[in-house]
Length: 250
Image 1 (tube, rainbow, N blue to C red):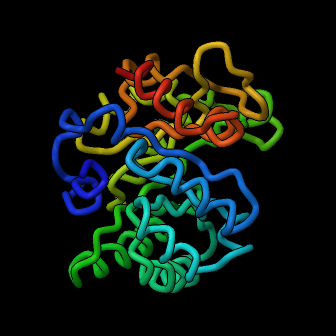
Image 2: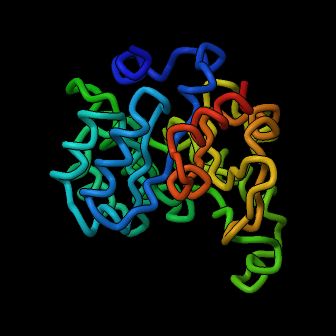
């Protein structure tokens, strides 16, 4: 019943109405559709969304996403980043799948963000439900890594600048580190969504994430949705691991 509400209710409702379970997004860190479907069956009713990244999408394709959404709503994490025309056309293609969330890179610039937002608005006007998020600064990047890329700004300052740019371009929210969620909420408002990867339960390894936070800490910082991957998908009992994280969030 909870998942039915998530799939059919507009995301424009106050994020304060979201339960901890609805806020939990699980990254499908598996290579095949068979494994992904098995994980979806184990997690159905226990999480708000499943995240399908570039690896799994390239391996299994659009038909897989359609089938997956029959079990749990999908966040299609493709991080599109190209010239505006290419991104708009790519968006028009993947929006036919009507995922719950989709994202592009804010670093693509104003014109690219506006092109993606235009495609999303047209999709919603035709009855679609997809919300567009812009990726600010990857949680795998720290200040040293950004400096190597030519960015003098701190990760949090760069993320805030990208968030403001994304909002102006018509995006519904951003993907950001939980460390930036509070400042982005303050600058852009509660209704501008903040989806935060790099979430690790208390005591879990950080793995390849540089800027991480626990579920409880992330919610206090203003995250709308929390993305958790391997601590759930690699657990001996993924359903129990998901329930434990929901309890920690609560």
